Length: 414
Image (cartoon, rainbow, N blue to C red; front, side, top):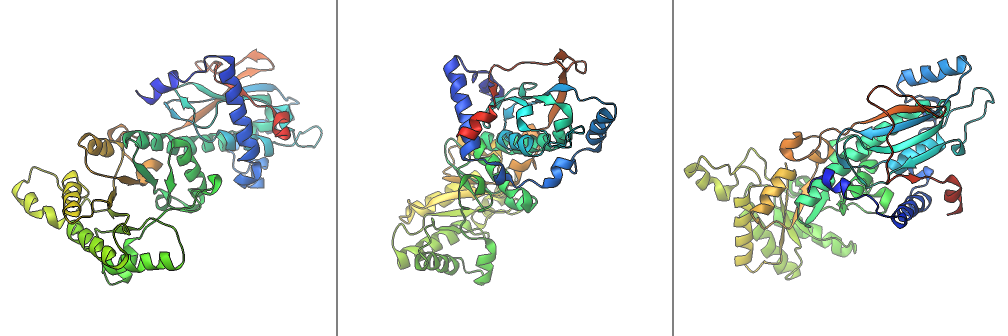
């Protein structure tokens, strides 16, 4: 079933469902996502981050003595998982403009917001939010809330597709190194909306209370002069001495000898700390390389692609570990993984226990060829002015039976 199909099957079937969704929205905003969490730049309220024409539009209307009540309709042109709703609502709550007649900021109570909820599946062109109120109050915020919805929904939608492809196996969100550090926290939250359980940095998990997970990078091995067992033993001793509770996972592709080095690490860990001390190994072989264990096969079978982290390499590794009595050691893979590659591994029953996925989740992918999304733009249109229909041709108002009415008074009570 595609995301679009799931969206069409997720409509509420009775009033109780609508009330439940309303409860989810209001409790999430009140208890998990206060405005202070998002640390908005106060210049947002003055239009500093707005496309200039929105600021000029508001100024022109005020100069003409107009302050129309409008309904703004927000939608995306593709299916996916919507995220950024809570953040967009808090933008509307805290960053409204100054009333040109009174000199006071507009109040959040001046707006009526009907919205979907973070995590909802959406179909193309389906409205995700209606904002009704004085246009001068929020004209300057269109750039900001659309950008929030676009970025968060991109990450959430891609994560959901990877989670679905992995058949319930652990997926670690490793996107932090592939973009500006300032988006780590919001990206981590979007990944959570998409279904991720583990992230690689503390910042990724800040909005939902998760710590970053991690094992060891290639730089740690380099610092131990390329001695993978020694680096792994040292890391394990550090964790034990400091009572740091982490699963010990060794990175074993440093010398492009995954099978030999994984077995060597497993033996060293068993000898020093006992069976079960090594939780897993992760392989991250470059796509430009063929692992030592496969080089002979690659020479004989030039038609087979044995580069990087391929199924043949994982199977060889699993067999070697099992033969040595290390059947408890899990195998993780990373490096160039996306939906199509994960689907291939799962269809072929490759013995992978967890996946590390990074840049492809942030839109650095080949779109449908990778089974992912490389863009997720939202659009906003005025569809009603002073109570009457008014819109660009082809962008008329549409209702959504899944909408929840935001009640500012209820938020204050929770």
